[in-house]
Length: 398
Image 1 (cartoon, rainbow, N blue to C red):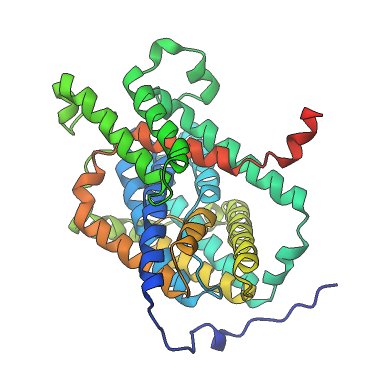
Image 2 (cartoon, rainbow, N blue to C red):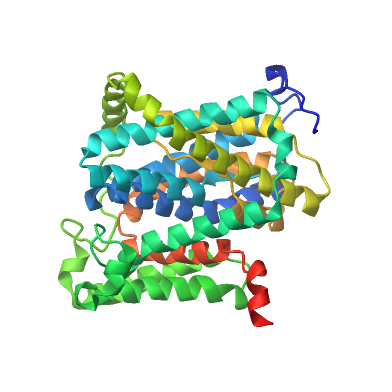
């Protein structure tokens, strides 16, 4: 039986004096370049499942999530160099829940409110797991369980992005979109495939720039080529190929938060109780995703993380993120390894990732509106394939 020691809140606030090194600056910047576009893609996946017009809300939720997770989780967590941001498990669970509610006929406003409540409940559960000392049990989860979990999430992400990659209506399931080429938008398919191919093959050419960034730039270039011959693609209104205007930022974002909180106060206990199962699933997946990354980070740096403190910090960060309209997140493997390879040394790398994400959001919000939806789909398909654990399938070659 594993010995479990409860976590003391007195240890949550870092006692060491923050020390910023050049490696943390460069590591945070490199990690942001990976986490930021992925967070937007995850947000669009979740909110786009409600209705295509909610894609801009999703992009904003991803931006808020990557900023808050970077700042709060990195400061309060128990792992040096860890980068926290919206992640694939959150996108998979929340988009599946949103699709289920849409099929049931619930209103979009109610779905958004329930997504916020689920995220906050999941964060509360994460913090609770850390407080009672269950963080150390991650090492006892069998490898096949973790492998199956990663593969399952990867397949869900890929399936959810196929309609967007093909330019088909989001209301269709992936097999319905695949079997009817007449509804495909070949421009979206070309943009998405260009993005995926460049993001996949870029690392064979250079490792100085993250493949995700090069993939997005390639997708934007492909969109620009189509826009040269089609004047309608140079306009945002009615343009289904791009995310669309983020006019809900600024004062609109604040009024949106106020309306959400007023709506949450009117949710009945039966609705909240019905979300506990989804919130528990989300909390478990986010915790596994985070601590799995921490274990890998320990092996690479010969360090030792504090799992219970990490869960408390992640839980608080997720509660704050959702309270501010952001997306849930976890310690992200890809961004963490990119930051590590770029020189990150301490937790300040995660804080710098949050600072750089906030700077990018303030300076380039108008640019985000022009990111093609199929480009984000192509990035997520690549992420989904990378999550699939192909090791157990090697026996098929024998």
